[in-house]
Image 1: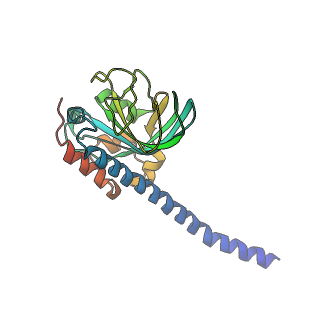
Image 2: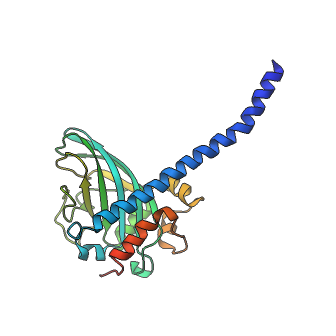
Image 3: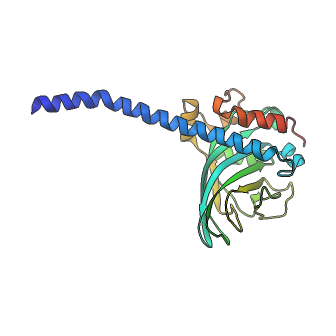
Length: 236
């Protein structure tokens, strides 16, 4: 019996690190897929000129993408999604687009909704205060923080009038039946755990986005290159 227990202990000692390595690789694949999906969503949306006005895109300091946000309810809704945020580099956000930080969207909203669906969201962060606020902590989207500047596909949400006084402009592309979509009451924040998986070490979101010293991961190449191609210059 003692020999059996000793043998089992030896096996567990050898196998456990292998399981941990496999799990870590699976997590890495999920984050890479999320970055690739974010790049695909941005390219598909920006390839249609009428989706997001070019003048607003050119004025944005940062872009946040949440591919396939899940939202399901009747009357009372809840949202959950994971995505990425890239900002223009350089002083006053005037340079090329930089390495992304992973982002999380969580929370709920009230509004008339039917059925359930997956929706792609693109958020334009219009000024430095909004960008630094998101990078520093959790930000709640509401009437004073988020506004839809116009429809993407068939859905848009509006909390205030669509002017540049808003810090965040939100767009959505629905993939199913939906009505009255809104992100009000939801929160967005940097996902530091996912950043560790993507970059292989702990790096604060602010450093990833603003330092210009973090290389763009291969899975984010399409996201960054699309932004560089579609809005290469910041226009105040």
